[in-house]
Length: 144
Image 1 (cartoon, rainbow, N blue to C red):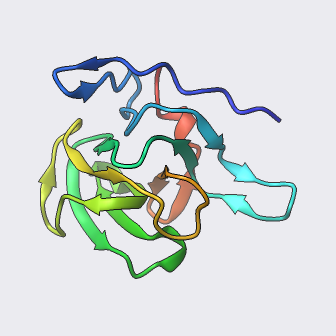
Image 2 (image 1 turned 90 degrees about the vertical axis):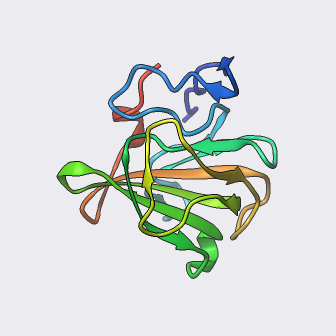
Image 3 (image 1 turned 45 degrees about the horizontal axis):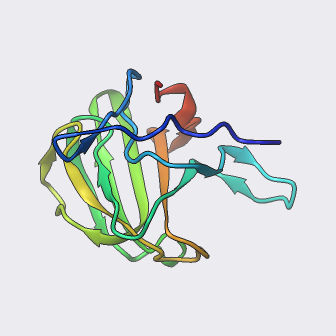
């Protein structure tokens, strides 16, 4: 099944148009892999968005960085942001991490740059929305 592309990029003052959803788009680009079960028996707990190496990745919502590191090898460099109400967002396969654990971030603040870290074949951002430990379909939170 084809995955709908993310809305086209539009930039204003170095930032992207994050859209009109409850959460902002962390980057703009083609969605390589959508949320959920895959034909090969694997599952994607988020979405993977293609973007050139070094593209800025932005916080989708205000929160506090609860993890910034690379201990989960398949995700490479990763940032986890905790939001109110038991919600979290995950930004993985980063080239650079620009925030540290415990930092407060605002929606639209740069948290890193798109990379090819972890087990991916091309530069991309893996983005998740979680309620506590349960993965949610990010497309239900992201607007146009």
